[in-house]
Length: 177
Image (cartoon, rainbow, N blue to C red; front, side):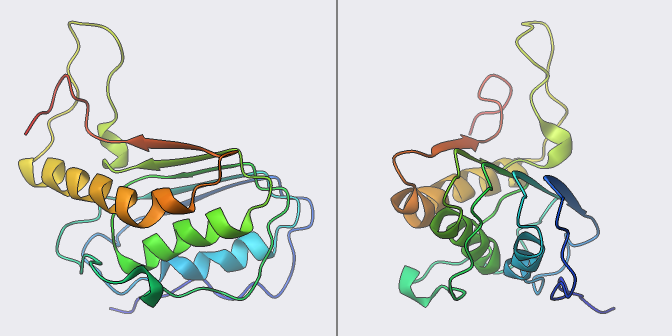
């Protein structure tokens, strides 16, 4: 099986304002380079909203627990119109941290960054008291909590005062450790 990273976009999506990317089947691979998705941002100069939906990322990948200065940085790629970014199944895999930090450092109009540490199919059912969230394995809950800690360590310090950081995790009403 071969892992394919995003190709360098040779043509531009000159009028693209909204981009949703769904990556499925990556849950057992630790080698996918999420930072390579920057090529789509570069190819879309009018992009305002970027949503990255990742199928469940299992804890079998390498959690990054190192010096933030060892994280890769791409040369200046300004994303002047990007206002809203959401990444689902966010985890402290090195290249995913690098992607989030790249967006924070280079999206000059960014208003909101949402990092959802739960699998995309496990969002809370809502405010109704009698409804429960879909079942979630204890391992997923622990991974989400580890991801929250990584966001605090590697991401929060990069958030500009004009950017709202939304950190979503397992529903506290349905899941507790």
